[in-house]
Image 1 (cartoon, rainbow, N blue to C red):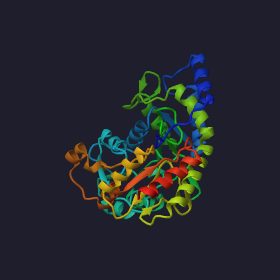
Image 2: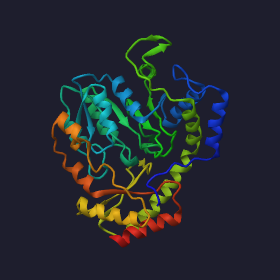
Image 3: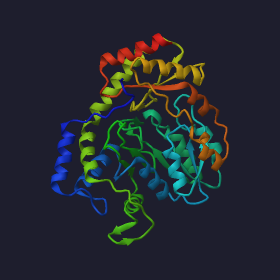
Length: 367
């Protein structure tokens, strides 16, 4: 079976972990051990911002950023429903209310027009998601945020290597949140990062990461235990160096797949945004004029042939029992339509060129 995603780990990562274990420094009380500190410095440079705060999961990154943005009980956060549930979880954990808003059918990212309509006096944050590695269109969202005095927290969990207007994904947000989970374009096993250009937000994020402390045993605010271990940071340093080659491989695979799949007019292929680059975390196609039953049949047949194609977000968050019961029903027609028609194909670096051709030809035959 060709899995939909698979981390690419080499001897360099193994050696880095062993080095940490032999050093005896496996973590730091304030989350600022030597490996973590170096990783943060390098990641900030990669992300094109002043600060990177490393944490233990992407969900922790989202939660901290939403809290740092000032979200509290009664505040509303505008976000897509077509995303992994962690995006909404972070809002609820902070005490806020998720306001699920529809997507642009071309990009699967938040629709700026829909966001404008969703803003109320209670809105505090706009939380766009760079879905599948396609960076959200931040410019119109920035204009909305400026008009209503809102913060932008960008969920860049899938966007390592993506760019928008010549800058890395997340560079135009007040804060961007990244996941380093095993399936992502680079990994530390688990792990996450918050990036920001704001000195004030960075100071707050550092305290939130470690029990609200600036110094040991002196909590200045409510905080959490979201530290990144030194072992994860050591892996991250190696993976960050390899990331350009990983993304280049994904890009080449995506280009080849698009060439092959162009022969079927029912398949809507992903394209890169104007003035930007896709990270190709997932190569996601749309089977036009179909329903979930037909899409799922195709997926089942591909898996029988050893290809791990997957449909992500088949249950949009606003339809999940907890969120539906807690925050009420919302009509999101583009979200629900996409959830029944899209599916993703493997393009990760461990896929070979021959396998890419086989994936494309197999899908064409099934259609």
